[in-house]
Length: 336
Image 1 (cartoon, rainbow, N blue to C red):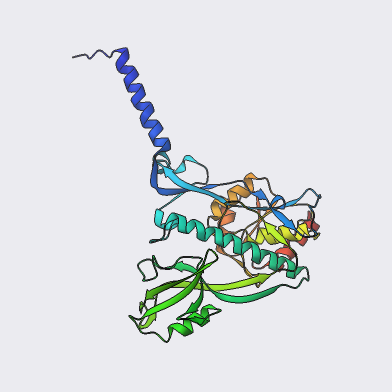
Image 2: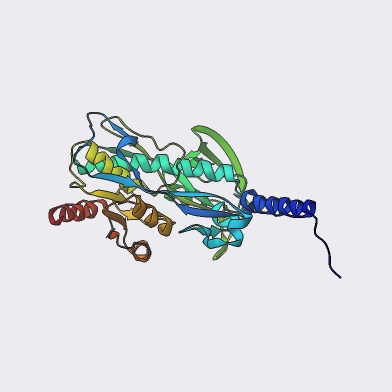
């Protein structure tokens, strides 16, 4: 038997195919896609009292990553974009935390990284910076723990059971007064406003008799700078641009850091000047390469090894701390 295909059926089939293709392109899935973004110059984002833009043809660049919900087509064809990686929802938004809460935490990390970058840069220039411990910052809330849904990443614990705390060690000391099953009253600062949250304790996985609520803590610090500094990155979040911001601020204040080179940098910067590891190195290396920079500073160790895999001719310079970054850039400038 032969079936005669009419023009109307062909048109209908074409429309169906078009609709399916359109759906594949736009319908989001439960996964996220991470994509490279060309490195951005730091100078236009930084304002510093008494500072000015250098004009030596070089520049400091920071790198970020574009991430969003993957479409059906992107999930089916992971290699649709150069440098793309697919990640599960849990890898991007911790279990028990909303996407909005994660976004707020990322923006808080960015604001903190900017203050730390300014402090490290100004100290390197011989300026006086004061840093006062003010509490314990929640870095992560463990999934399935009593703190989930009660406390949030970026909350700063300032009191436990009404007693003032200024460090993670203070919180640990207060927790020793509690037994498993007790209720602990935390006073936290969230988005600049205080609130009190009660959380029941459970036994620690590795030490059942020790009472915990399920959070990881880091030091919260009030940083006072000797000059006005502002860094505007819009909606970009996360702590990984700290190294680039510190280098860019020094350039703004008259220190020839880049020696006429275009320098991209990534790395979480700590108050003591150490450079910590970051994520999405693959995408950030490709983004630096696309911006046409001369050199890419990355945290030493695994980050540097991964960056070299995707460098494709881009010079990768591993650094452990801020002073080492300055020394290596000085050497590169002399040999350029």
